[in-house]
Image 1: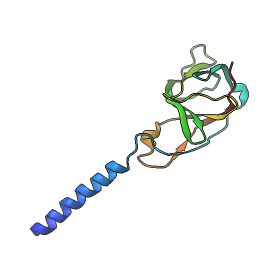
Image 2: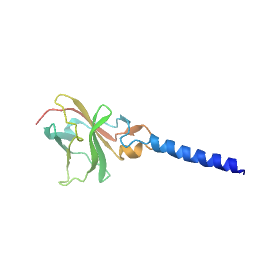
Image 3: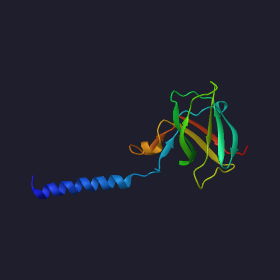
Image 4: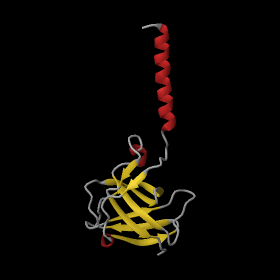
Length: 142
Protein backbone atom coordinates (compact mmCIF):
# COMPACT_ATOMS: atom_id res chain seq x y z
CA UNK A 1 0.00 0.00 0.00
CA UNK A 2 1.41 3.38 -0.95
CA UNK A 3 1.96 6.19 1.51
CA UNK A 4 -0.74 8.31 -0.19
CA UNK A 5 -3.30 5.52 0.11
CA UNK A 6 -2.48 5.03 3.78
CA UNK A 7 -2.83 8.76 4.52
CA UNK A 8 -6.11 8.89 2.58
CA UNK A 9 -7.48 5.90 4.49
CA UNK A 10 -6.49 7.43 7.86
CA UNK A 11 -8.12 10.74 6.93
CA UNK A 12 -11.34 8.95 5.94
CA UNK A 13 -11.44 7.09 9.28
CA UNK A 14 -10.93 10.35 11.18
CA UNK A 15 -13.60 12.09 9.09
CA UNK A 16 -16.13 9.29 9.72
CA UNK A 17 -15.38 9.44 13.43
CA UNK A 18 -15.94 13.21 13.53
CA UNK A 19 -19.20 12.94 11.58
CA UNK A 20 -20.50 10.33 14.02
CA UNK A 21 -19.51 12.49 17.01
CA UNK A 22 -21.30 15.54 15.64
CA UNK A 23 -24.44 13.60 14.75
CA UNK A 24 -24.89 12.35 18.34
CA UNK A 25 -27.37 14.43 20.35
CA UNK A 26 -27.56 14.29 24.12
CA UNK A 27 -31.29 15.04 23.90
CA UNK A 28 -32.35 13.38 20.68
CA UNK A 29 -35.42 14.22 18.62
CA UNK A 30 -37.27 10.94 18.65
CA UNK A 31 -40.68 9.77 17.61
CA UNK A 32 -42.30 8.13 20.65
CA UNK A 33 -44.78 5.58 19.40
CA UNK A 34 -47.31 3.98 21.63
CA UNK A 35 -47.48 0.56 23.02
CA UNK A 36 -50.63 -0.72 24.67
CA UNK A 37 -52.67 2.01 26.32
CA UNK A 38 -53.10 1.33 30.01
CA UNK A 39 -56.79 1.49 31.02
CA UNK A 40 -57.54 4.49 33.29
CA UNK A 41 -58.49 2.27 36.23
CA UNK A 42 -54.87 1.04 36.47
CA UNK A 43 -53.22 4.47 36.76
CA UNK A 44 -54.35 7.26 39.07
CA UNK A 45 -53.00 10.76 39.45
CA UNK A 46 -53.18 11.32 43.20
CA UNK A 47 -51.41 14.68 43.39
CA UNK A 48 -50.60 17.21 40.68
CA UNK A 49 -49.12 20.69 40.56
CA UNK A 50 -47.24 22.54 37.80
CA UNK A 51 -44.00 21.38 39.46
CA UNK A 52 -44.81 17.72 40.25
CA UNK A 53 -47.17 14.85 39.43
CA UNK A 54 -47.66 11.78 41.61
CA UNK A 55 -49.05 8.65 39.99
CA UNK A 56 -50.12 5.36 41.52
CA UNK A 57 -49.73 2.56 38.98
CA UNK A 58 -51.39 -0.82 39.41
CA UNK A 59 -49.50 -2.36 36.54
CA UNK A 60 -47.07 -5.25 36.95
CA UNK A 61 -43.90 -5.11 34.88
CA UNK A 62 -41.25 -7.84 34.75
CA UNK A 63 -38.44 -5.25 35.03
CA UNK A 64 -37.51 -3.76 38.41
CA UNK A 65 -36.67 -0.39 36.83
CA UNK A 66 -38.08 1.21 33.70
CA UNK A 67 -37.62 4.53 31.95
CA UNK A 68 -40.63 6.82 32.48
CA UNK A 69 -41.33 9.91 30.38
CA UNK A 70 -44.07 12.52 30.44
CA UNK A 71 -44.38 13.71 26.86
CA UNK A 72 -45.89 16.81 25.30
CA UNK A 73 -46.26 15.47 21.77
CA UNK A 74 -42.79 14.04 21.15
CA UNK A 75 -41.04 16.39 23.59
CA UNK A 76 -40.09 14.97 27.01
CA UNK A 77 -41.22 17.30 29.81
CA UNK A 78 -40.09 14.93 32.58
CA UNK A 79 -38.09 11.72 32.40
CA UNK A 80 -35.93 9.26 34.27
CA UNK A 81 -35.37 5.74 35.56
CA UNK A 82 -37.86 4.72 38.26
CA UNK A 83 -38.42 1.58 40.28
CA UNK A 84 -41.46 -0.50 39.38
CA UNK A 85 -41.28 -2.62 42.52
CA UNK A 86 -44.74 -2.76 44.03
CA UNK A 87 -44.11 -2.10 47.72
CA UNK A 88 -47.63 -2.95 48.87
CA UNK A 89 -47.92 -5.80 46.39
CA UNK A 90 -50.57 -4.12 44.27
CA UNK A 91 -49.12 -0.81 43.05
CA UNK A 92 -46.08 1.44 42.82
CA UNK A 93 -45.83 5.19 43.25
CA UNK A 94 -44.20 7.42 40.66
CA UNK A 95 -43.37 11.07 41.40
CA UNK A 96 -42.13 13.05 38.41
CA UNK A 97 -40.90 16.62 38.19
CA UNK A 98 -40.50 18.58 34.95
CA UNK A 99 -37.09 19.43 33.56
CA UNK A 100 -35.59 22.76 34.68
CA UNK A 101 -37.36 25.68 33.03
CA UNK A 102 -40.49 23.63 32.25
CA UNK A 103 -43.77 23.10 34.08
CA UNK A 104 -46.94 21.10 33.66
CA UNK A 105 -49.73 23.25 32.19
CA UNK A 106 -53.38 22.99 33.20
CA UNK A 107 -55.61 21.68 30.42
CA UNK A 108 -52.74 20.33 28.34
CA UNK A 109 -52.74 16.72 27.16
CA UNK A 110 -49.67 14.68 28.12
CA UNK A 111 -48.61 11.07 27.67
CA UNK A 112 -46.95 8.94 30.32
CA UNK A 113 -44.65 6.66 28.31
CA UNK A 114 -42.95 3.71 29.98
CA UNK A 115 -40.03 2.12 28.14
CA UNK A 116 -37.17 -0.27 28.69
CA UNK A 117 -34.31 1.99 27.56
CA UNK A 118 -33.28 5.62 27.81
CA UNK A 119 -33.86 7.80 24.72
CA UNK A 120 -30.11 8.53 24.57
CA UNK A 121 -29.40 4.81 24.14
CA UNK A 122 -32.17 4.29 21.57
CA UNK A 123 -31.04 7.22 19.40
CA UNK A 124 -27.75 5.45 18.68
CA UNK A 125 -29.67 2.98 16.52
CA UNK A 126 -33.04 4.54 15.69
CA UNK A 127 -35.21 7.67 15.60
CA UNK A 128 -38.15 5.76 17.11
CA UNK A 129 -38.78 5.01 20.78
CA UNK A 130 -41.35 2.38 21.67
CA UNK A 131 -43.45 2.93 24.76
CA UNK A 132 -44.18 -0.52 26.18
CA UNK A 133 -47.09 1.07 28.05
CA UNK A 134 -48.73 4.46 27.60
CA UNK A 135 -51.26 6.52 29.53
CA UNK A 136 -52.78 9.69 28.03
CA UNK A 137 -54.09 12.32 30.44
CA UNK A 138 -55.14 15.96 30.60
CA UNK A 139 -53.28 17.79 33.36
CA UNK A 140 -55.44 19.22 36.15
CA UNK A 141 -54.11 20.43 39.50
CA UNK A 142 -55.02 18.29 42.52
